[in-house]
Image (cartoon, rainbow, N blue to C red; front, side, top):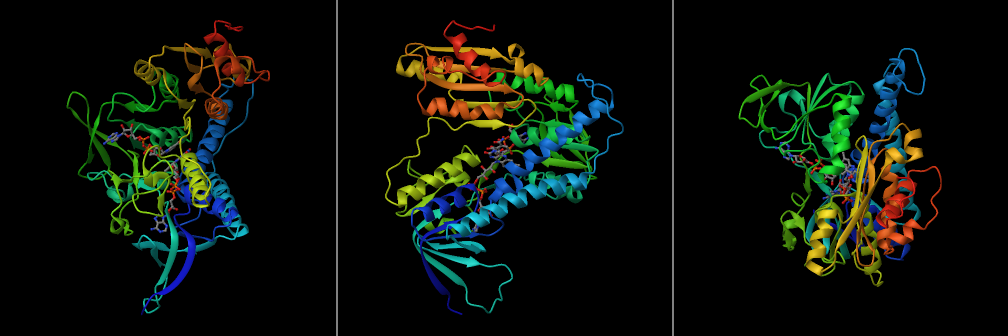
Length: 479
Ligand code: FAD
Ligand code: NAD
């Protein structure tokens, strides 16, 4: 049966944060846009990533607090009776948030006149995509869409360890997707990888009552962040009773398939019994299995190589988001999606952000935006400037104390000569919300004085941001 062809101006493969934002902006700019999504609108982020994980983290914290209160250990003097977890309701609540947001994406696409095609796209060439729709009669003509511009936004997928495949041990070995929806709280959860997912979800399940052990190949948790920043998180894990095994090598399952075998730094083989094993050792661009290789694009390993306008090596073929490699973050994908739509519409623009803030939703949270002291020193050595840095501890911030969260600090990194702010880091309760101020100051090219002399509301965690700049200028008021 010959294929049936339809035409569009912009064809987007993938309806995650990158693809759906690109579609909305393109439609706003008058570009006839079609978006093909094989699974669910909202992609990894809305369905099995950012949103459900943060919902679970919040529920786990609420439960942990209630248990503290029930045990008579609340410093606030709150005492409650018996505490019970109705996990099915917790998961329904989390799924409700996902449904609301993914439904919202569908409505926004509809409102803007984007044509959404449900099905898996197979690239035929740089201008043609064939869509395999679920449940299609094999006798039916395949649907092909031709376009002027092709935007690849297929995202990423979890890395699988060959000696510990997902599903092994009768379903014991799982990815984050399953770990967001365990039907019961695992008695013993072993997590492989102390990165973002391992620590965010490991902490959540610990608070929900599981015994959790995190096995990490490197010598410390969250090896992507600087050691000082991670210290309060490591201390909190100890307090929570979450066990970490650092510099351990995972070997696989034991013969019975009931325990994870790991080798400690001395070479001794250990068995960690587990009813669930979450493997969270990274994600990789989804660059196989949908005809991408036919385009013979320039690649950076498994990631599609793009320039500062998200152009690939083929004319009028663009790529954004996780498919283009690190950092694998939703807000980066969205920003690239917006940019590509604007460039296609003829607007000038380049993807050259001053910073892409990274937030780890551990307890306490971590934020990093722009240069760390080490990367600023290296840049300074290259470009001939000196660096200064200052920290302000939350222990000296009234709001942090009233939130029972005195641990952590804010750190600013700046040039010593002209006091241009180069970077920010923070660790503490709710510091994710400070990332907006950090990003803004870097994009606006703020100097220490700009932030130091801006009135910050009292009492807020934001005052620590201001005090940090005052301290860098030698004018600290509250320390
Ligand atoms: P995706 O969201 O992966 O979307 C790609 C879409 O393309 C998918 O829906 C997929 O079904 C579709 N697709 C792929 N191939 C085809 C095809 N051939 N045909 C049709 N459709 C196709 N990031 C943050 O910034 N903050 C967080 O807090 C955060 N938490 C996370 C928690 C977890 C557990 C995980 C797994 C990830 C988290 N991330 C977080 C990362 C974030 O989810 C990704 O960076 C983001 O989703 C990338 O967006 P994207 O549009 O590039 O790709
Ligand atoms: P990650 O890169 O954050 O962490 C993976 C960890 O696994 C690292 O510490 C690594 O050293 C360790 N590791 C690798 N191989 C191992 C092995 N064989 N044995 C033991 N440890 C091993 O990856 P992730 O946690 O899977 O998350 C994937 C991506 O998703 C992240 O890079 C991030 O971009 C994104 N994400 C972001 C957020 C957020 O923004 N808050 C949350 C979750 C996920």
